[in-house]
Image 1 (tube, one colour):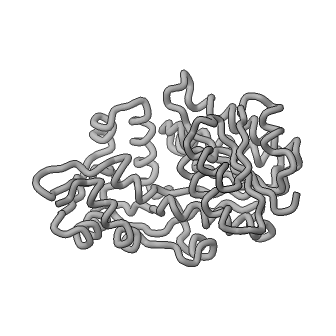
Image 2 (cartoon, rainbow, N blue to C red; image 1 turned 30 degrees about the vertical axis):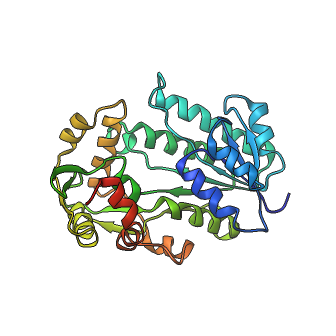
Image 3 (cartoon, rainbow, N blue to C red; image 1 turned 180 degrees about the vertical axis):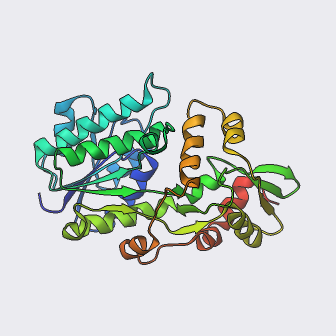
Length: 303
C-alpha cells in the first residue's frame, strides 16, 4: 500500500515521537505496533485513527502480520536490562524483525541504530552494541535501509541523570564527559527527522545518518541552564566514568559508563549539517530550554 508506514516499537519514547510526526501527514496511513497493548499510548492512538496492532518479535507470523502491506517500516528496538542476557535478547528480536521486513518486501526500513562500542574499544555497552549488530545483519540481508544514529537526549540531562541538589537552587550535572562536547537533540525532534527520511527514500536509502542538534561541553550545558533558569545555578560535577558507574547503580550502569567513555574518545561523529537538512527547524539546547522552562522548573522544584 503506497504511503503505508508501520512503527515497530511505538511504545518506546522514540516511537511515540515518530508516530506523532507521521500522523501529521494525511498522505500517510500509519500503523503503530505495540508488544504490550495495555500501554496507555495504544489506547490514545487508536482513538485518533491510527491502526494499532500487537506483535511478538519472537513470533514470525506475528511480525509478518504487523508488517503486511506496509511500504515503509521504522524499527525501534529497546534493551531490557532485566533479561538474563540483554545483548542477545535485543539482537534476537532485531534479527526477527529484519527477517520479517525481508519476507514482506518492505521497500524502505528506517532503523534506529548505534555504534559498535565493544568491537572498537573492548568496552561492552550492550544497548549500543546490540543495535550495531542488528544494523550489520540488516546490511547482510540487503534490506533497503536507512540507519539513524541518535545522540544523547536533552530530556535525559534532566531526567535519566537528574541534576543533584547541592544547596538552595544549586545543582550539579553528573555526566562524565570531562571537556569533551556531548551531542544532543530533543526527543520531540526524532519524529520529524524520521518523517523527512520516509518522504525521501531515494535520497536516504543506503545511508547512515548520525544526527545532532547541538554539541556542548557539560560546563556549557550548565551555563545555559543557569542563564535561562535563574536564580537556579548549575555546575559540571566533573564526575569520572568510574564514579558515575558506582553512583548510578542498576544493571545498566556499566553500559552507560562505557557509552560515555566511548563518546569521550571522540567517537560520536554526529552531523549537525545532515540534521538541519532533515529538520529545518531543529532546536539547539538553548532554544529547547527556553521553550520548556516551566516544565524544567517544576521537574527540579526550582523556586
